[in-house]
Length: 332
Figure 1 (cartoon, rainbow, N blue to C red):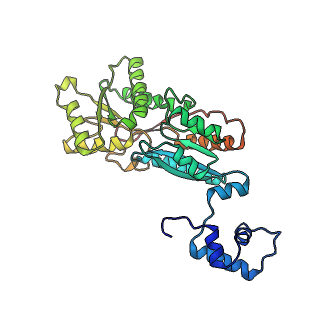
Figure 2: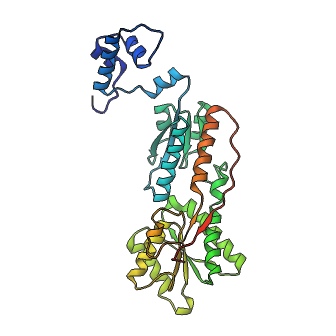
Figure 3: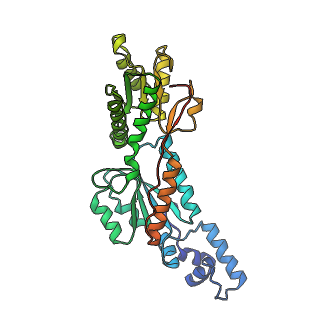
């Protein structure tokens, strides 16, 4: 039976009882008179066969599903994104909701995911066609779009505040006397929505402060890629060198600090470095990493409440104020 769901019919056959008896026992129906010996036989058969009731059966029994399908993009999740998913999972479980995460493989319609498990709600962390979203809503599934923000999904004001991250990075570096800045950003297409907002925030802050736009270097998060970006900033006349870098994320900041050590450069003396996301490893960087805390816990709590309200048919909660803040350490 490897790879196949064990059915109640199989449990009934193993326990030598009717399927109705299996249903009564496993659903703990108190109004039925099932002998204790029979009840134990059914439970033992269910344990031996590793039986779990299907989502569809559970939804029919409860009158509604408690499953929240979290649709993940089909790319590696960084530290911050993984922490976001873990935090949201904890919040939903505290609300007696059952989160289920699935990756949206390229070319696979989201329909194949949600129809298989009958969720009460779907949280999209990747782009889907507008028609797919409407199909879910017509079927009574509440749909929320968690992180991506684009022309099709304008219901997420939280992500637009990503520009604040870039602005805060620049403002901190400018306050430390830096006038020529760089921005280290990912080249991967799936990061472009996020990095674009942060770069736009950095450029706006430079304009307000009378600075030139940051010199943006796009690269993969690899030792060779980040080292090459560093040399493009550094192998120029001294007067043209940048003195500080805003990194798209703490992951990129860690990689840049490593590349700098490889070239005999130190932060913040040669190049100041500021990251974003405030991952737990930040204090252990060399030197400890200055970064931006964009209050991911506030976002997680808000999205969990949005999902709960949508499932219950209530009005969505008001968008909470977000106040990203500096975490000042030694790197900038």
